[in-house]
Image (cartoon, rainbow, N blue to C red; front, side, top):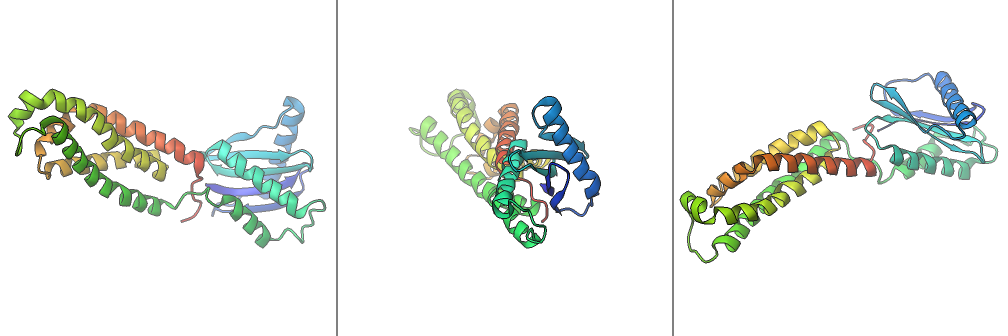
Length: 269
């Protein structure tokens, strides 16, 4: 979530600033902090400090262009990926230099030009707003739950009892086919619960909502099996609950990490 962005010279002269949140910051205090942090770290450590934790779900990302003596600073959500923000900020600085150097005339650095420049660099790198992410996730998960349930039942019937006709009872499953069902279901459940939760994590980009989605999705799968032509397979699902729990949360977390590496959270709905 890009909360604010600043472009200034290493001597502390502010060239451009934009705040994307309702919370207001004191530019005079901030630009002094940005310049002193970048200049001090360069002189004392021979490298520029790039990431600073500001607390309250905020962090500072700094990028510099030593040739043009330009500093770019962005305040973003603590959930955003540092490397992604650095790449975006570096690209913005380079485009800024290409458009406005060498004079950096304040009259030419219009807000309209900078809005266009920033939006071009954010294109394809910003996630949807939270309501859209929730809707989009479940548009994908609901039909996926139904389709994967049907495919799982078909695969089990074909591989385990394809030679038998008609439906099978709980006793038959537990005594004759249970070991085979368990082995096959072990693989199938990785797909049934792993892939959807991976997708959920990628789109939601929020660990609390990913966990909630995992629980709702599990309940949806259980209901699908209960209403299916082979409800007895529900017992297999329930017997694998600890594994399903680990697969769901693990896949959701992996999806989350992939998502935040590719997208910033959206600042406004």
